[in-house]
Length: 439
Image (cartoon, rainbow, N blue to C red; front, side, top):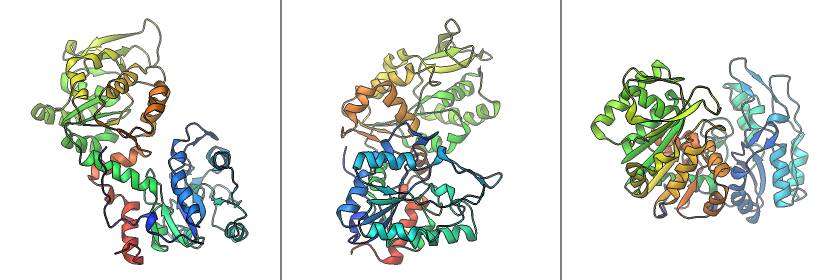
């Protein structure tokens, strides 16, 4: 891939003096589900930032969110093993062979942890003395001030800033402006970590691609992808759809009904159909897998051709793309002729239907000259599960890049820039405030 430059207004970790400094680092280590780490990829991608901080004489305090323990409707926060950072710390300790401390702050019932109390001072003294490799704060979303507004949030941001000399944001996947990703930058010199830099630089390959540019987009809901989908459509040369998004598009274009697709989404997809009637960018996948039930039961699913769709037809659940779709000349030539391919797509209803995703990833790999960029945790997990050998072989391939934050990528595409993301914007504003970028 061609190297892309970062905006000079973005303050970079390598521009900071870290010697003997306590460095507060926000990661996106949100990989724990039901107390288990299913895939440590997001953690592994941040090891470089962590190593650099220590190698430059810094003393790291780490933090991340895990899951969604804050219920916005009730205002309650659920703390427990399911959303604890302990599995992350266990993984880091086993990988790095060093010790991390997790401060023990008592929650206020279902209101979460009210504050960072003075009990952390002993841990910081141990950190400065080199007795521990790092401190890992509890789940940031366990704290009352992380997502809420008002005094609790202001206080939490100040408490975080009071722990350290420098703040580093390496959590590209955490694009929402919360206290630990946004507010804290008002109080400390702040920098972008190495993963943040890599994600932004590679995102430029999507926003300013080498052409022909092909995007593959799928999803379980149409309404949540309308904004990014329209933005992607305007930027691509060809667009391939999958999942419920493709089902909705087919309903709107051919006047059919597919189980699980709402009339509201069909109406919304009419705009894309009308737009494509003029620009002809959508490459239709010609063979679908229709099922009578939401599952894979022998004798109850079949392959049908898009060419056979007629107005008024009512179909069952369309749960996958038949793999032979990717052998169709129009589809295969589109993929093989691309210079840039962006994928945010799981093609089938997992875990029952996976042939479409496997065929897609295999077809894309056959294009050895294109920049291939994958966005989204589900997209990456499907790739890893279905084609583990290929996944391992391309992890360090310069033609592949796997984003850690799929939602962040789509938000940046919709905004047509990563520099409008609030946490990134906050870093650039911080550089002006603290004059931290060398001139």
